[in-house]
Image 1: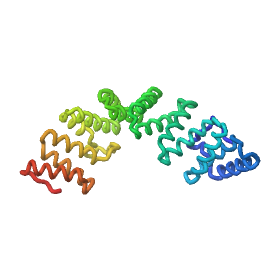
Image 2: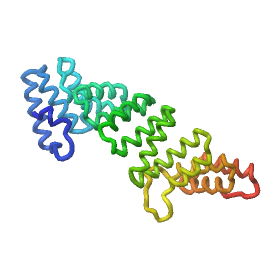
Image 3: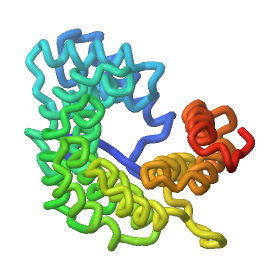
Image 4: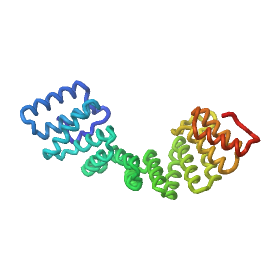
Amino acid sequence: MHSRDAFPRRGAAFPSQPQLAAAIAAAQERLKGNPQDIIALTELGTLHFEKGRELYPEAINELEEARSLGSLDPRIFYCLGVMYQELGLYPFALEEYRRFLRNNPEDKEIRMLSAKLLFKQGDFAEAVNEYERLKFQDPSDRLVEENLGLSLWSAKQLDRAEGSFRQLKTMGAEPGKRAEFYLGQISMDRGDFKGALEHLLLSLPGAGAGIDIGLPLEKVYAALGLAYQKLERPQEAKDAWAKVLGLVPGDAKAQASIKELNRRYPAKRVKK
């Protein structure tokens, strides 16, 4: 039986399929002698979890039964949280992650998963709290900083979000480009279209730069198109929306924007 201290196992510590099969058989044999052996039930449930998604129903039943019989093994919370998340049962997954974190408060992976679920559910204030705790643990983590900024932005804390994205700008070329995009969007939210345009232009990879900014380029060009429209620069707006159509043919927003621009500024038409 694997120890609690070695769980959750990751990377090279993960057992091979033959090892899993042997351990599952051993746990099942123990349960034949005592079907209410909570240690064997927990062991079998975690092994079925590690075996793969096709055995999640068995794993959930075994772990829930072990808990109902009195087990407080934190492996139960971890496995159930991951499985419930993968099955789309986010409130149940969050509750299991919270239980696991009470036993392992410094576990970064589960705190990240919990923060992402909170964000996905629209609980932005709680997501901010989780990311702030993660940032306290590791102030140099770019993913944490980016997600903290996005959570603050979604929570309408624009000043704090701006500070977070400015910090992200210092963390490398790729996250820096994304930071410029987010800063451009915040400027748009504030009605500062000139400032938004400046940030959005800086978010473009640039000819020959070889930088994948980690965002769909059509999103950047769509934001540029909108900024140019707000600044009443129709030809540049049309050019930006045309780039969106080049990347996503048939994009409804781009088509509608070009049609509206051609209606308002008929002198310079562009092909849809």
